[in-house]
Image 1 (cartoon, rainbow, N blue to C red):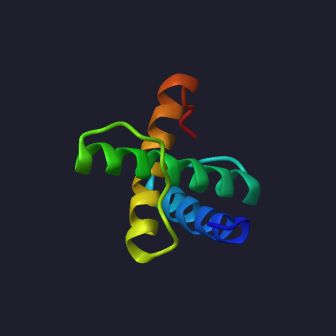
Image 2 (cartoon, rainbow, N blue to C red):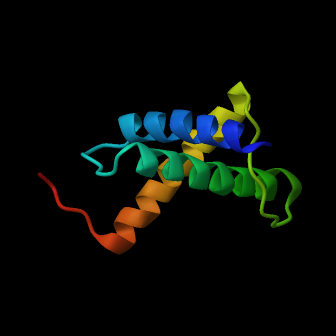
Image 3 (spheres, rainbow, N blue to C red):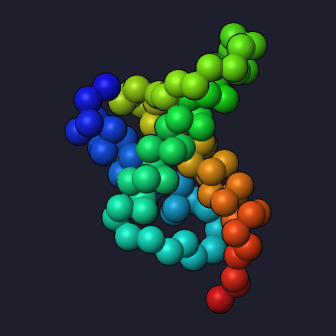
Length: 90
């Protein structure tokens, strides 16, 4: 997938994940993109692990299913990040 598709997928998945995840998250547009791209890798890897039973790093494509998996992966990434970094409630 080319870099523009990665940026678009990152923006879409990161924005949706931040809207779904409870609380207030920091970071601007760059943080949202990175969250979505990390979510695409986390979601793609988990999807591969669950469907094939093998652990392989992979990412989702730019499709409806790919965005859904990337959003789930971004939510998992947010959860893991806040478990290690701690989270302040405002």
